[in-house]
Length: 98
Image (tube, rainbow, N blue to C red):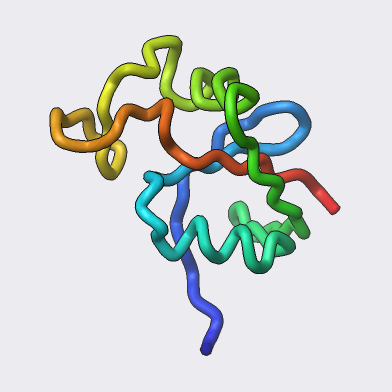
């Protein structure tokens, strides 16, 4: 499978950055679990990073850093709507330099 580019929102947190995704078994979450070592390019600079999934109650401060204190809001594709799961159920990864 050829390499490709995925644009994601990165939120600085604890010496790395956070990404999150809906708990729908999508590509991004599967990829981070199967191959947690990857590269992130910001501008002309590339960084070697490792993803660590944050689970359970430990993910609350990470989600609050991304979405604010109200985790009962519902988001889909970054847009608040009434038909998606609450952001508190999203899957969270902390990416740190390796």
